[in-house]
Length: 407
Image 1 (cartoon, rainbow, N blue to C red):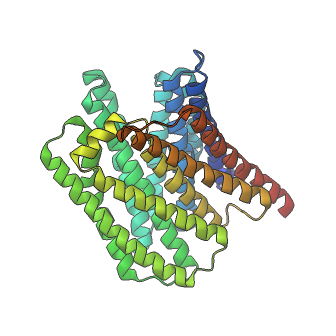
Image 2: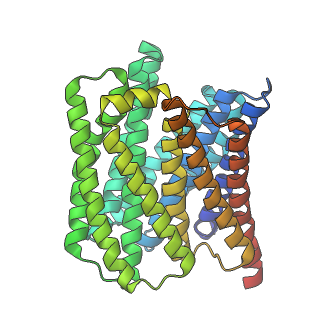
Image 3: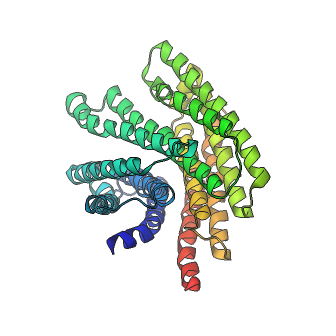
């Protein structure tokens, strides 16, 4: 009974947490325009980021991998317990971080989540039998998730021994790099290739293998790009640039793969738009990483962190990761977008992403060029955040309406 309940509702829980993380993001922007002593900016950011990455990102991607790659996986008692504890710990983080920050209860929840995620990871690895490229991408996504998680345990030692030093921030960036560029990138593209396979869309296996090869070889050295801010030695710039070029080469093979896919793709307009949208976002991410390997751009990005770095984070989490997840959930039949409400919600969400990115990067470039910055910047950004929340909320509500109609 528990297995049926969890497998049916895991995506709904992830989508619910997506709505709630967007609401926390809206509160953060509200606090910029209407500051309040009641709201702790630092705590809200921690709550927003943890729920977005773990509640929406991790849970949705993990659920999709479980759903698509290991449908016959045996659900042992320890496996079912781990899924339950993972979900409960994430839900409780929604309250622990905004109200108490990175304190004892939040740390306990992260420990519970970490241990539970290990059980889930090892069970999925055992359930991956094939050795084709889609399976390899998913397998390595889990490897990189496990690597990223090492930073969470090391972080406690760093805080006690060194405090919030450069080592502290580089440890955080270690976690984020392998979570972003490892778990999410590899896992999502593995899911996409698996969808292509299930829909009998012919793709050159050679191109897929080369895409995986260059992406995989680049992943570990690309961490150098995350630590250039801390006056790293010059050879780290060379290493970061080499990794960025390898990622750029993998992108070229991705274009060849998608060029073949579009010849036989029988998706509806919504799915095709989402695919093109996320590929543009991913391409911008790769190009920006090439630029970030140069000292000039590192210095300017640090000086204009609220615009360029926050813009990059939103480019990845919203324009790439979140849009990619929505696409995958549509194509595996979990989410349905066939009524006006769902389509309007999706359009509002995508519009919010585009406007937010234009505003963040636009303000940064205006300041960089010593031109007049955008007036009422924070108020306009608040409106953009409201669009994001409203769009996600409408997509969420539409799923209940469509399920009711289906009954």
